[in-house]
Length: 466
Ligand SMILES: Cc1ncc(COP(=O)(O)O)c(C=O)c1O
Image (cartoon, rainbow, N blue to C red; front, side, top):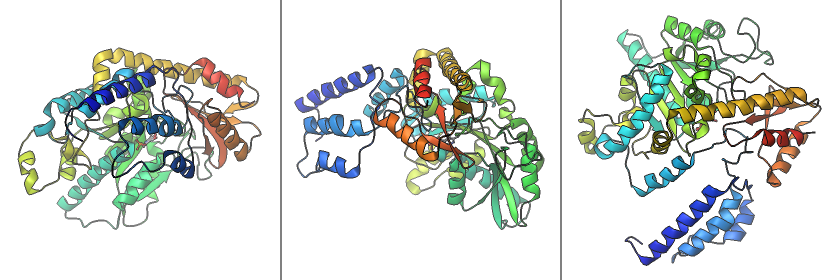
């Protein structure tokens, strides 16, 4: 099983051949899911005492499993938030796997952590954070948000303790009614409460006292929520979105930072999807005030052209995060006594893949200008999609897009019609576009993060809704 052999020599060339063919596909095959029963029948039992051998195991993957797995990088995959890694990032992911790297501690991973830190320093600068800010790559936005919120509560707890105050009845996260579902999950895991402000005029709870009704969370709206908190509920963090998942809305960081400052709250920005637009100077103005936040996440696997799974979590002052997240054990003393930067100390993890290396390599190869250009290309396609929707009589925009998510209403369609249309496009191998809801009404959305998505792709999808 271990040791280099003639069989491994052949397997290596088969893997390289498979990978090369996959990378050269333009476009890749979109593919679609299969049922559990059908897959079981096709694969048979693959885990056996004697093993299938590499030819057969690779055949099962290539002929059965891969076709039942959607390609997130297909240019007409505009569902959820897809992904569009550069070839350089994908190829370097193979190197990361081949290098048996432990990237939790400086002791074991100094070289690769240094490279990841350069990416984090680059992005921190775009955020307007000081040079002393620190961060870490975690698997995804859900975990990044959770880790930041745990750090925020740690700080609030320490502050209350120092002031001689007891633990509150309930700790509270404040956010928008449209922030990502991972916030509710973080609240569940942390056993804290979450209070949201309505931000859309389509929300029955909304009034102009909260916001302009355009989906942006404002300090004014959250102040109203704070005023109405029940007795014993104590907020510790505000979560703002730099690009909501469903609509691509960027919250009003300036007024939220004012509120956070006035109330002594941690301001966390969830830019898992939209924070990426900071790489293009043209769009930096959309993020005014983000530099006043305490922490921020952006997922390179979403709109920064990196493979799954990678979320960049950045703290303006990482000392609280370190206090909240460092694990102690006798066998870790040697790591903890070292004053070097240990990524494991900044989130909920210990062992860690060097998941920031694919984006590091790709950035090092292509340079940051290429990223800005790719961002502008995707934004231009999103703009084109919005303009076409406005021209087509059977379609309308649910909201004017701020980033590259375009939410569309097909006039007259029922929820069932959206589902049937979406399923047909997928099963035909044409496109992957899923329905969503806008305050109870089924609509659809295009999430454009792939520079290979063309105007013709958009025309094809919009035309299929006639
Ligand atoms: C704004 C936002 N935050 C958080 C997440 C969760 O990220 P992940 O799926 O990487 O856990 C998503 C996912 O789409 C997102 O769009």
